[in-house]
Image (cartoon, rainbow, N blue to C red; front, side, top):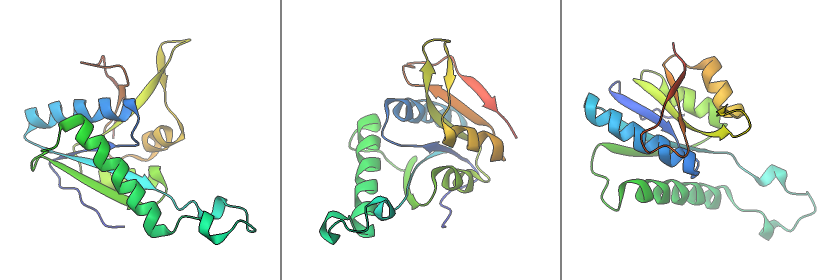
Length: 161
């Protein structure tokens, strides 16, 4: 796995959700204040193994098609958040692999890792999924959970190195 992160960077996990868009916005504000770079990371896993062995080969996307779809999702999300001109303060990285593992590797040496999260409406608390929980357990940098509906979020620093 290639690392594309500099020490003065904020890594953001991006999956195209409103929560990851909020995390990108928040990270951009922090990066501006810290003179840092935002590294938007999207991890993808091959889906071919999930198809039935008797499914026609044409129904199975190739790894190249899957990678292209992942790159398009990341580019679209970054464009939605930052507009068509992102400049040199935002880098987009697409990596094949298990999301938590990819994010932990990409965040090594960064200032922090930002993840979007949905709010558990029944309790008003962060509802971190398995990727977020794995990042909390394994991160060597602070992890910040940014709520989906945040304009200026009431952030919860949910883990630190």
